[in-house]
Image 1 (tube, rainbow, N blue to C red):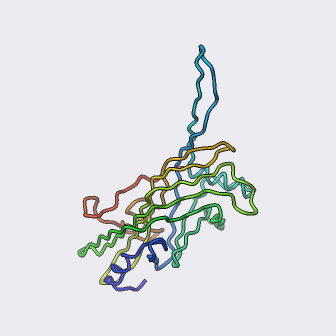
Image 2: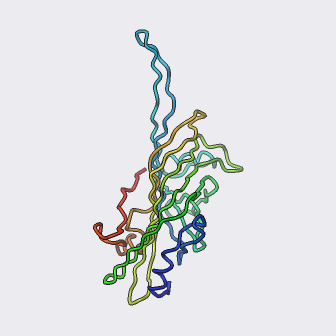
Image 3: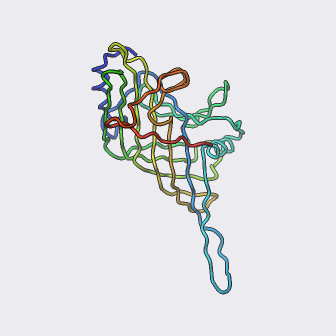
Length: 246
């Protein structure tokens, strides 16, 4: 990446999807672990106790690991327990999803997912003139879906959830030149779908990366890289979200 800092600051004011009729384009493909932590609520069994009819509700936790297992079953394979679900934003602004484990080739599973922005975007920018750290937060209403993919066995459960998502872009400037960037995503969501054929309500969190510190290995905020983001008490500083664990 070789852009002047002023140009990058102006570009950071663009929205990250076409919903806002503008796009924030990464200078390289940006990849982060995609974390899904949802609770499915379905109708439970009906019982009678001393003349009282009780209708219960079941709460079922669904994590990234459950999503990977469901994908494996649909594709007729079994992914290792340490496999990751990765979200990548390309230089063209498109999102893809893949399952990756170790040095094995990534398996593209983009067709199972829906990312749909349904509102205009609201943006905030933080730039440290002394540190050269640049952070852009883009807020928009987004729908996330988990659906069957043509040619693959049907998934055991599906969801369509939505909420206000915050996309955080970060870069480090050195002597007027941006030397790295990354992104993180965080959304508290709710919606509906089905679980084993039964109607279900869903609620929880979807995230990618880990709050303000973002970037791949060696990149800003990534392993071996610098921590990206303004101090927590800085104006417009993004809130750090705990990363969901499988």
